[in-house]
Image (cartoon, rainbow, N blue to C red; front, side, top):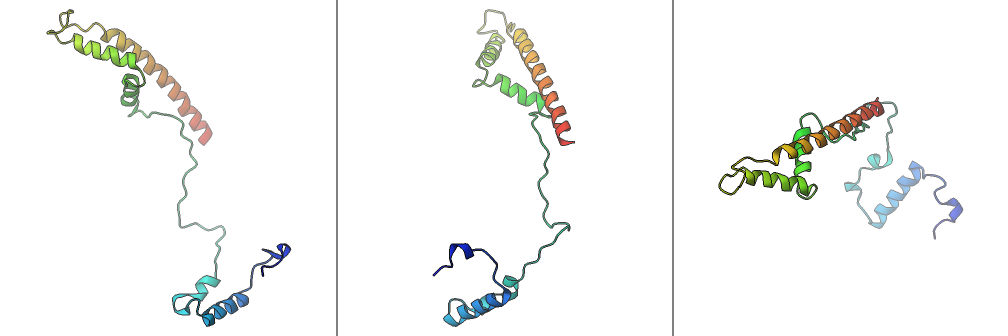
Length: 143
């Protein structure tokens, strides 16, 4: 029968009682002592204020989206992605079709590239300012 609720988990068993339990299990044939290292089971070493063998993850906070190398490709991809900004993608396709002299009425001059490039420049400038503020906030949080 299990011990009463008030006595459950009250104290840990001693090494002697654990050794007796292991001996009893061996007598009953529940497991063999050949496969069990008793000292390894019964001993536990806790190291305080020592260098640990494992390396922990850093607590650095990074909320910024871009780095200097990834700003232009990632922002252009997100601005010209037809699922995010369909109008930008539409004007890019129209500008490419206007550049083909055989199918255009503008004689090969793409008139939509200037307004599209202005819109992309302003949007990328706003993203750069926002991401720079995130980098400063991250540096303040991590210091």
